[in-house]
Amino acid sequence: MAVNFELELVELRNKYEQIVAMLEPVQLSSDVQALEKITSAPDFWDNLSYAQKITAEFVFKKKQLTQLKKLENELDDFQALLEMLSELEMTGDNAELDDFNQEVDMHYEKLFSMIQEMEIETLLSDEFDARSAILSIRSGAGGVEAADWAQMLFRMYTRFLSVSGWKYAVTDISYAEEAGIKSVSLEIQEPYAFGKLQFESGTHRLVRISPFNAQGKRQTSFAAVEVIPLIEETDDVEILDADIRIDVFRASGPGGQCVNTTDSAVRITHLPTGIVVSMQNEKSQIQNRQSALRLLKSRLLMLKRQEEALQKKELAGDVKASWGDQIRNYVLQPYQLVKDLRTLVETGNTTAVLDGDLDAFIKAELVYCKQTTK
Image (cartoon, rainbow, N blue to C red; front, top):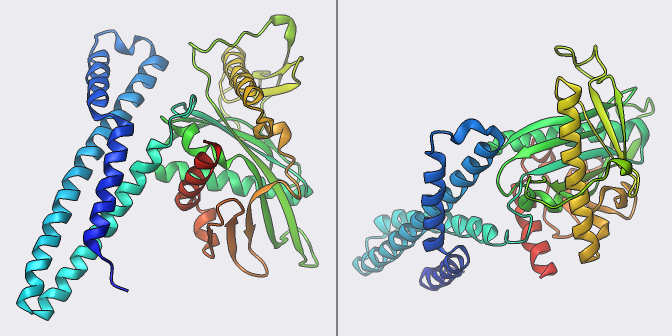
């Protein structure tokens, strides 16, 4: 059945108007000008963390403004193409008409993709959606299999972040004895990282022929993923000294200057909640302590939000990394399939997914989860 591009254009323009209403380009332009003025101050880079945050916000909002203008121009160009197509259909030149139809198809696909991308950004309006994020992975049921699976997920997410051009740092990692990792945490310094990745939280299930089983049997293993927003200095999260226990230890894993030779790693236990955080990527104990406290505040902020919303299941402690909890299945044997159990998005290209091709899953879960929680 042929696509009625005239009707599609009307639909795309309606969606564009909805996007404009959500993003408010006049206010967006004002924000960009204000942020640009801040970044041009002579002492702007004196506070590095503040400067990085403001710069990231400036770049993101300027990009949104540019995308809105580009989208408006693309809609106008598409309308002009349809008018030319209509004139060409009256001439009866079939060869030229076929070529032009292909051009219209390509332009429509490009426009549809741009609209879809902007629609997703309009969904990111909740309290913490604009924040950077902490993404943590921990192995679950399955022993060495689960530890290896956790490392595969670690590789998958770091590939995704690298391809996306997002800045990240490994803040803590605990290696398993035989193979793989017990847990790992990544700090993702990207505007809206939490908003875009929050629904990756949950249990991820792998089915494959085990490389650790001499009999070549099929094995099922689990790993839990948790995504929380990164704390900001303006957040009101109080931690009493009497409520925490601080332990220091020697960092593990690949060495670096002083990393494996001094007790620089820090573990903080929040006694009232039982939340435990650790940090070992900095060279000094003081730096690791500051970073660990920031991470603890992020977790407590998330806990407070979830308690108020009665959504405690998003916490890492509530993700059991076992049967009945999984949000996504990765089947490598006896067939190849990655399937999200909420959105039903699936693909047989498991290699691409494990290499970080997550866009289809992340976009679908954002639309599904945001709309079902409104």
